[in-house]
Image (cartoon, rainbow, N blue to C red; front, side, top):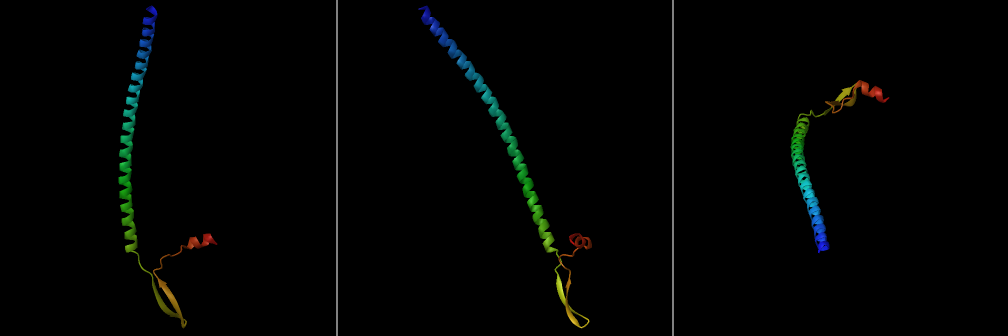
Length: 106
């Protein structure tokens, strides 16, 4: 009978140790879940703010591009006579080369 109670005591101790290990792991995992939930919440807030900034930037760029194209001065082409020869003259050209820019490319 002493052997039987010894086996029961051993089994009880093993079960008690396993239960304590399980409780410790459960508590550890609960803490980890709370930390991950907080990180997820913070990341979600950052993503929402970034999306709002992207939307505002997109609207701003759209307005700028509309302003740039609506106020553009159109080029005009006229025919003039120089020394009796007909020459086309471009007024308000879209691109006017800088004097330094042509010197650099040569």
